[in-house]
Length: 63
Image 1 (cartoon, helix red, strand yellow):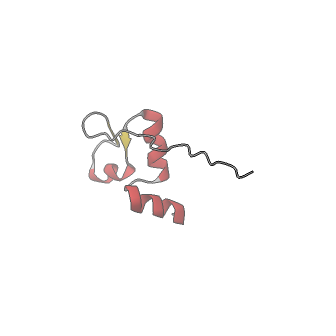
Image 2 (cartoon, rainbow, N blue to C red):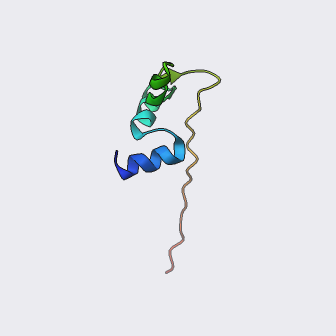
Image 3 (cartoon, rainbow, N blue to C red):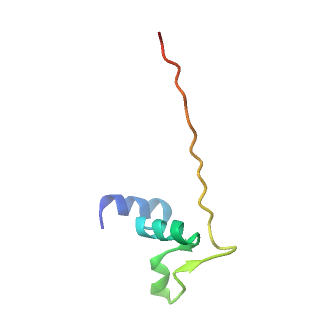
């Protein structure tokens, strides 16, 4: 596991692969669920929406 993967997992509880699969399937996916014999992906009330909360910041140039 890379430091980026570990950091992502530490913050979100999901690996980068989990995020990619979640985005592709539009479901909440985590390979860790397979260890508990649960389905890898959930859709519905338990699924977390992927929301873009970024914003564009325009800086004024000093002339």
